[in-house]
Length: 247
Image (cartoon, rainbow, N blue to C red):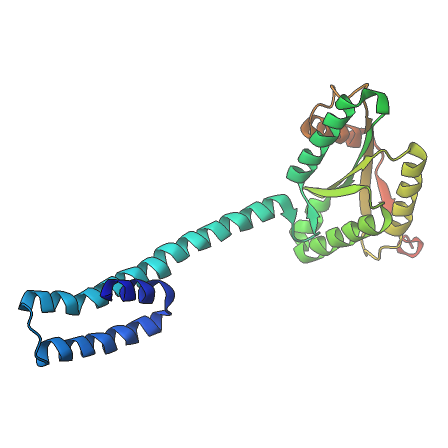
């Protein structure tokens, strides 16, 4: 009975309650076993007196330190995983999730060759953003959020927007026609021009359609992104500024 009580107290009671129960119950045990008339050997009495406080204390330590540490460690791992898969500033998923989605689309393209499945990939890069980040990190983060907000508001629900880092946004658009894609891009450009940045916001855009004909060439997201980044190097930088900002 003493061992069961010690287990219950040590594992399920608050730390301060464990201390008070040890003091009270140990005092009662000492009074009953030593001052009362109990036919029992002294060693057995001593064992019964110390059994409860020792067991309850050890189990309390196990619960509040070892078990709590394992929980905290698990939560820390979950936090790192979340940060790796989700950018908290722009509130967008990152490269990891984009890679998984792209792999799934490639499987569908190969599995259903007669269904003419394709996916459009568009990479939007904020050129020279590092200079802004070094001098005005908070403003840099704010502008990234503004760009992300515009993309979320102007793109279709069926499109998937990711932040791949280094000032780059990736949009994967399954089965969106070229005409629709051009119209969506135009809406993005119009919205970006309305941004009150105070500084030239220089963006480059590169696009690539992936279908059954070229899916082997772009067999993973890394190859696709490298191709898009090479396209960024040859594109002309487009400055998104209000007319009054050029004055």
